[in-house]
Length: 242
Image (cartoon, helix red, strand yellow):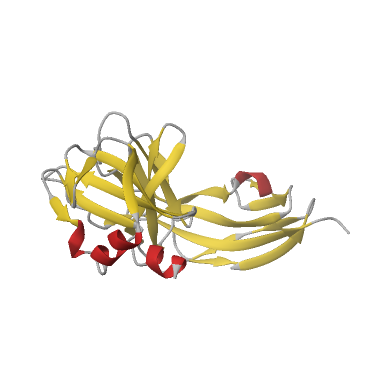
């Protein structure tokens, strides 16, 4: 009974400034009140609870705790500006850089971005640059101080040009071993990248040397003869020395 009551409440709510939510609209809320469930705002000034009304007052994040005897349930309420819209998917080409979405939730909140998978693109100050062709997400984290209190994804698509290939496309090495990666096709020049850097290093001509156990990606950022930028990638796994 205790678990059923609390799990019927939402984990998060997103509102706009000025919105009002009648808690009686939640399933079985009147029954919750009769059983003694009490909810209060414990963090943030984005919302207030007045009687049965949840009122969105300020841009930002508030945390509501609902209690039933010894059980507790947290609800995160994110209040957005009236004009705020969830950022559109990010579409860019290899080597292209675009500004990151401007997400403003108030001065007391910080926004951080994390690309998944990390080889797809990289964050540079307030912009994002495509590294390799593929699809993924940019995970947006909302922080208050050093604590992440909310997050949501933005889809990202990185497009490339040409029909280049890399050889080998997948490799397993041991720490200290080296392997030459080659690009198959017509191109002008290439820059090699290892992600994450800790697993090894690669020379200008594609010779990779493994330095630490782990999994990673070798990316060749390639300039084609027509001047366009594309990329090829290979996956590597580094084992410990026997």
